Image 1: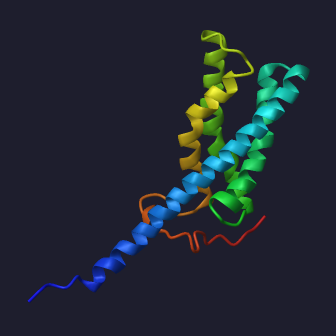
Image 2: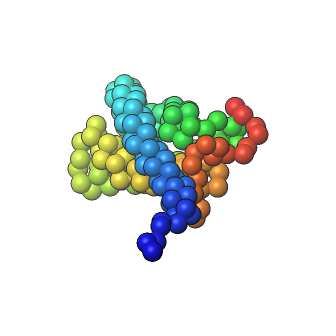
Length: 162
């Protein structure tokens, strides 16, 4: 008598596999949005830089691109609805990103002597993993320990929309 595979084996492997696939999709889409957002940020920074000190240009470009990032990440990356709660929390998650990039920018310009036109890009690369994890936690409520089991079909339960 040969043992047949358990019918439960394929069912139990499917949701986590879909969850991992969805998470990889989110990472890929996050990278695409990040590229667009970085390009937008850098273009704004270069446009503002001649008219104001480099750090003021950096801050204004950062805030403007963060607003665009919120909408690109809610609609495209995580495929969820924007809500007022998420909109208000999203900048809080980006405070970490801002601190990492600001410290990096200051260190690269002041201590390493890097060109002020290039340093923001280098600092942004360092902040990417932190930004992904924090934005995912804010934009998809309930992500964390059980995140691999989510399939992305209905990732949220919030009722207030923007």
